[in-house]
Length: 142
Image (cartoon, rainbow, N blue to C red; front, side, top):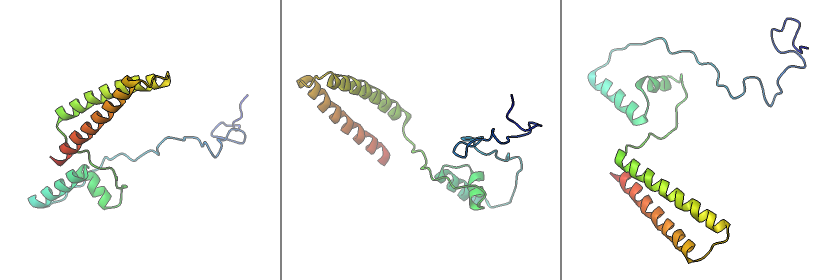
């Protein structure tokens, strides 16, 4: 049994989506493909300025120009900070170790262990967290 219209070309009474969950919910509207190009002449310094502004904004130059024309919404994300990859790796490893310690500590607290060992681990976790924050802050200043 079909609840659609006689020709089944679209939703009819009894088959429509509720207003709180319309058909296509969660899907972004289809965007028009960027298939056209626009070339303009500028000086070498103007080109360098445009590239520098785009890089500072963390965007391709084309997106920066579309934003200037009001053709796209400006993204308000902060650009990704440039950090030494070795530092990122080291911080990731420390974070993994901290996560393991925190899981052990949460388990110990859940089963009622509040003896000196648990408190010592908790204190050391706080010290490690503070040291890690200092390392990250120092790397931001560089």
